Image (tube, rainbow, N blue to C red):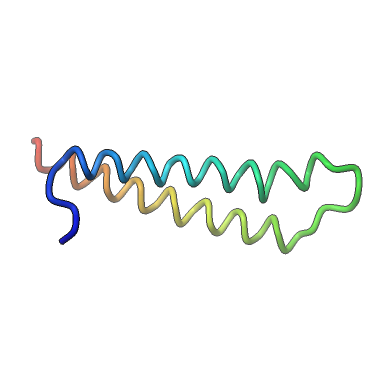
Length: 69
């Protein structure tokens, strides 16, 4: 596996949390704040990407915490 220690797992989990925040800002909040119609397709893709990145980050965090216990 490419991840060799807890620090790398923690950094990768933080990276995926940051990706989730960027997706929310660009694909969900951005179109909603414009005065034109909201593209449902972009919102849907944004929510799917958000859930994917959050899930990956949570899985990485869980593996780290389970080894410490």
